[in-house]
Length: 337
Image (cartoon, rainbow, N blue to C red; front, side):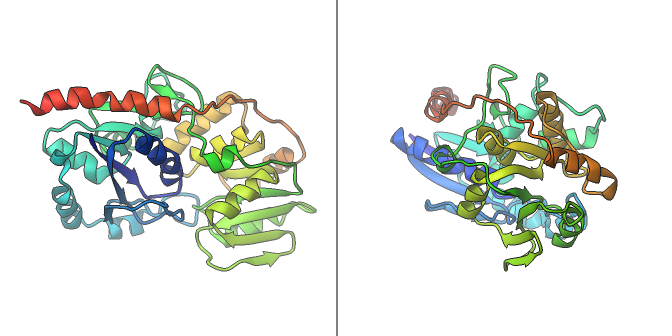
């Protein structure tokens, strides 16, 4: 069976999950090609990538949200259309898509099946938690960005039959955890200056901040700011007192799996993160709307309490991949017409 696995390269979560999904696919003895599109990831895949595309990336800002102007400047419709036409999706028995728009639209334009295997699929389920404040445009973008013909999703809980608990990568499952002396911070949509200004108000607390905006480590009193690398970030979380991060999916899921106390700040204007924040809040995880001084007391309260959320995230990667590969039987039948 010839399989194309297409991965979104904006942020680190999709590629982190792929590090476990790719070996699971290889164990099924499929002929596997990998496609990655996007420009905002810090994590590299230790596997050969057949198609490396610019894709359509949302650019992180420094004020708590997406930088819409830079995103607009990076969006080249002619290039995107050319990339869509360049991917020979018809040559594959199965296209597995982790919120990757180029291969998804290539399949749609050729009326071919595309199986979504992503967190976004779970977020869109009518059974998954949603924020109280409606965001019709954000929901439409999430629905249309990477269209699919069938969906398998990952979320913090099994909200539906086709929704699984998170894939926790093996380097996280195998690492030894301990209650250290610092807090791990990953807030890629905020500037280092903004994070420093806020955290410096909390005295006698050590912070290890991982930054998308700085390529050299520097220390300011009890705050260390470092460029993000996979190994350093995982070790920092494992040895932390707790994790302060955006309301993405993989980092909060890994923090919960490690039994670390967690505080999330969802990105402004990012519907998926608002949905994640709603789900986490339902589970008892504290949520802060933004990194503003008016929310300082909430962050302090979190630091000085020790509330942890119990979760059960078994390793079901092989079973999930087996279910997805069964889609190929339908795909082959469709190709005959």
